[in-house]
Structures are given as C-alpha cells and as structure tokens.
Amino acid sequence: MNLSGKVAIITGVSTGIGRATAEALLARGAAVAGWGRRAPEGLTHERFQFFDCDVRHEHAVAEAFTNTQRELGGEIHILVNNAGVGLFGPVDGFKSEDWLAMFDTNVHGLFYCTKAVLPQMKRQHEGHIINVASLAGTAGTANLAGYCATKYAVRGFSDALFKEVRPDGVRVTCVMPGSVETNFGGMQPGAAPDPHKMQPADIAAAIIHALEAPAATMISEMQMRPANVK
Ligand SMILES: NC(=O)c1ccc[n+]([C@@H]2O[C@H](COP(=O)([O-])OP(=O)(O)OC[C@H]3O[C@@H](n4cnc5c(N)ncnc54)[C@H](OP(=O)(O)O)[C@@H]3O)[C@@H](O)[C@H]2O)c1
Image (cartoon, rainbow, N blue to C red; front, side, top):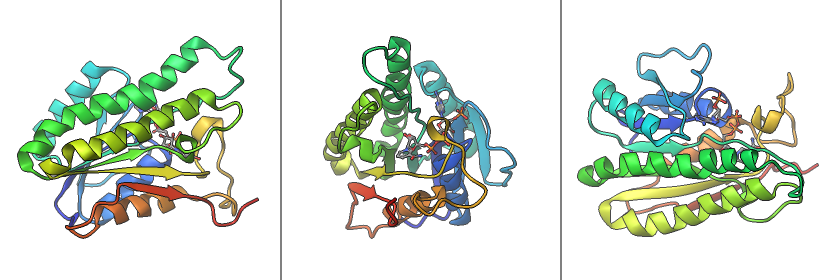
C-alpha cells in the first residue's frame, strides 16, 4: 500500500511504539488519528489529530470512530491496535482486577476497535489491521501468565481474522516484538539507547514494512528480537 494520503488509526499513541508509529506514518504522508487516554506530548502535525479514547470501553471506541470519520473523512485504511498494559507477578496473589484490566485493554479493546473499523474497510474492499502482540504470545514466561494469556489471545484472534477478512480485501498482520525500550510495565528508558533492546522506531519500521508490502503479498506475522542478547 502506498501510504501517502491514507488514513490511519493508532491506539495507545501517547508514548512508545504507538507514538513512533504515528511519526513514521506521518513521514510517509498518511493522516493519523491517534486514539488514547493521553495525547502524545509535543506531537503537532497538520495531518495528526488526537481523539480521546479509553479502549476498554466499547462506547468510547464507537465515539472515537465517529469523531475520526467526521474530522478525517469516511475512509479508514489502517488500524494499528497497539494500546496495551503489562501487569506482572505470580498467579497466586495476582489481583483479579489487574487480570481483568489487562484483558479489557489488550484483548477486549482490540476487539472493539477492530469491530468498529471493519465495516468501513469491507465497503472500501481495502484495509490493513496491525495487531501489536508480543513474543509473550509465542511462549510462556514465569510470572507473566496473565500478560502471556492476553498476547496469545491477540495472536489467535489475528490468525483467525486474517482468514476471515482476506476475501474482503482486508489484511491483518500480527507483530510480535521482544524487548523494546519504552515505559511499558513501569520501565524507564535510559538517556542512551539500551544495546540489548529494540527501540520503538524499530517496531514502527517493521509495521511500515508490513503496510507497504506488494499488492500480492500479505505479511501475516512478524517476530522481532533484540539482535544483541544480554
Ligand atoms: N515494550 C516492550 O518490550 C513490548 C514488547 C512486546 C510488545 N509490546 C506491546 O507494545 C504495545 C505498546 O507498548 P509500549 O511498549 O509502546 O509501551 P507504552 O509506552 O507504555 O505504551 C502503551 C500505550 O498504550 C496506551 N494505553 C494503555 N491502556 C490504554 C487504554 N485503556 N486506552 C487507550 N490507550 C491505552 C498507553 O496510554 P496512556 O498514556 O493512556 O497510559 C500508551 O500510549 C503494547 O500492546 C505492548 O503489550 C511491548
């Protein structure tokens, strides 16, 4: 897909991978609707607009979608389901409200956003949905059971969805990064890039690669790892 002039929705746009993807899409000439609870600080661009949206609530997603179409026009070409939270700890003692909050954001929110955009993408017979899962959706890790369960769910959803909507001209790519240097899970990025982690811009570049794949090609899954292991 030539990204110039396309309209993209990105969830969880305040920081990290979501923000970097917004910047990468803007640099390619796309218009970006950034959905989230907080706007990305200092990101001003004539083709960028922030829409308040807590993805855990279906009515908030529906409202953000209506507002996006009103402001940016009816056509929506790209959805990047990126919003996510990571809450970690052993299963015994893990708070049930934390479990629910993670599923509400990482799984249910992603479903609400996908459901909101699909009718329009099907009408256009054109669209690309990028789901940001994780390597935590490919193998379990001790003390990450809830987070892994959400990302396995995202991977399964993506795999089924691409088979469902490919005949409608809609592509689906599941992106599964390993460690990325962001604020995720309470981490603090250092002043200089950590050589053992990927940077948000690296994941954004992979997303652009999937979006720009030749017309005859759909990249269904991408796994990414730091090249320099600790
Ligand atoms: N960093 C990693 O190592 C890594 C590895 C693999 C996968 N991932 C995945 O990458 C995605 C982005 O994470 P990140 O690393 O870029 O971390 P991040 O900087 O913490 O970004 C997470 C984003 O999600 C947003 N968000 C959280 N809950 C939300 C909600 N209910 N409604 C709307 N937005 C919400 C946050 O917005 P607020 O500002 O409102 O909190 C923030 O913009 C996540 O899905 C994560 O699981 C991260």
